[in-house]
Length: 388
Image (cartoon, rainbow, N blue to C red):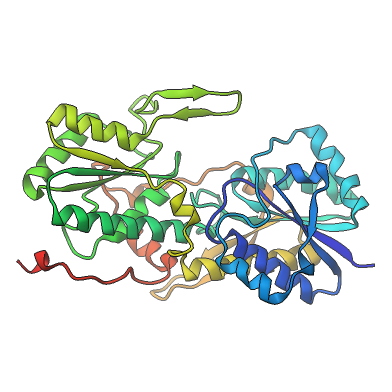
């Protein structure tokens, strides 16, 4: 009897997490050692409620819809796991004839994946990780599926806001980007520029301390020069003491919730400079947008799903699929197997080489690195102000 394969989603969804699921199902159907592909409905907590759905029961026509389905088709969670929880898993898996387990998620999920691998290895159950995050902060890989689409969304949104502000240059617009501890998404706004002077005019990432006086100085200078200014700021900006520039508004046992950085900065501009300002916070729109899904991101998401199946069925459990970028002007990546123990809970920050000296912009080196991931140029448009 062939062993079943279980897929579990963890953490926040992306625009291509379901493409990885599609890759898993497609590859598993080719493998005679796999019986059913089961989906944990609702994330890791579904393991204990044994809420599994047979995904191989769906037609190929239906399954192709996963490639363009936002969020997580099988649900996800941030369900906390403890040692006693991990210890229960092997018996649950054996009860459902599950011989292979794949977890698709970010840093926390890869940590859980390694723990599940350790408790299952002596039971003959293979466990591997599929990387996923919009934040692009997973270690030991050039980039992560989910990021390219989030980067494309923010670049396109910033470009459109920039044209709006250019056409009515009377205020400062502050866009807040996701990524509390790492500035990868925020930095992607730099891809909005078609020529020198285009928005965004200022970019602030959490890897550098935020200096309020320098921010106000830069905004005032640019406002006098342009009349309209677009700022992109990370949700995780901190001061020189490492404290959030906005105070916490709620604390729980597991998390601290802060106010909006964009609203705080817009209010600062109004109060300190007397300039009209407004804030924009796309938030989860960027990770849910199928309309701006990157085709490169989607293709690579399918690939890591397929390769995870191959890894776990060939005895390479305990690994995550990663990407190693190849040198040269043409974008190419080589898939690699990364030990889960080298990945779990390590955050990959934006390198210093990608941030300018003043800490208010992104370098061309980052733009060159990021451009291939968004899957082609942003839409062209015509603004007659460019010809005056």
